[in-house]
Structure formats: C-alpha cells, structure tokens
Image (tube, rainbow, N blue to C red; front, side, top):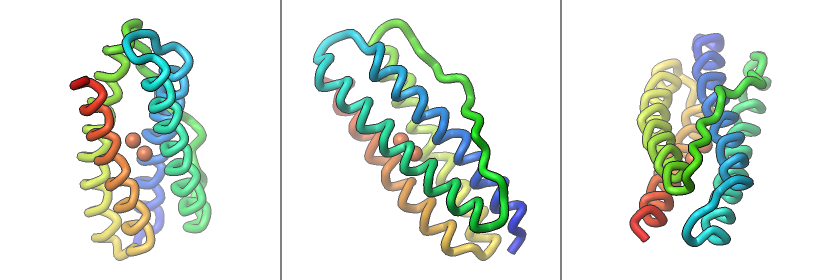
Length: 138
Ligand SMILES: [Fe+2]
Ligand SMILES: [Fe+2]
C-alpha cells in the first residue's frame, strides 16, 4: 500500500470536511427564513457530524504517519436562507460522489481500515442529502 497516496486522499477529504464544518457553523449563526429554529438546529447538528468526520480523518492520517491539514476552503455564505440550504445540498451531493471515488482509490491501495472509515462517512453524507432535500421540499 502506498501510504502517501492514501494520506493525500484522506487530506482531500479532510479539507472538504473542514470546509463543510465551517460552512454549517456560519449558516447556523446567520440563517434567517422560514422555520428558523428548526433549520438552525439541523445546521448545527450537521456541523457536529462533519467535525466528527474531520477528527476521524485526522486521526487516521496521523496513524499512517501523515500530517493532517488544518486548512478549509472558503465557505459559501449566501444571503438568503433558502440559498444556504441549496448550496449545502449541492455540497453534500458532491461529497457523495467524492467519497464513492475515494473509497475505490483506498480500496485499490489495499487499505481496508481507511475504506471502512470512508464508507461510514458516505452513508452519513447520503443521509445529509436526504435531510436537506426534505427540508427544502417543506
Ligand atoms: Fe462529512
Ligand atoms: Fe455531510
């Protein structure tokens, strides 16, 4: 197994998780719109899940001897609440596609431990897509 290649993939995932974490936090603070109390709670809950993903990726990267990144991409913060939900839905849909690809790469590298971690996250991101779709169709 090429540890550097696995670490590179896990750090790509970690960048996305840190970005999602910061974006959900910011949207939780700033969301205005219909159903605000309930939506803000959902955004907070999602941020905690992404933080858990980030922790697990960082721990796995360190176990493999790599250096976990601390740098998120800049978050997208639209003004309208409904647009916040839309950018998050798109981000979660993109995450599902990314995780499917990353799972294949770490599997090909012969790292079942990382694969199992990423498969758990994929299931969570699929759930996030469903939760955001549900709230957008309210
Ligand atoms: Fe995540
Ligand atoms: Fe997510």
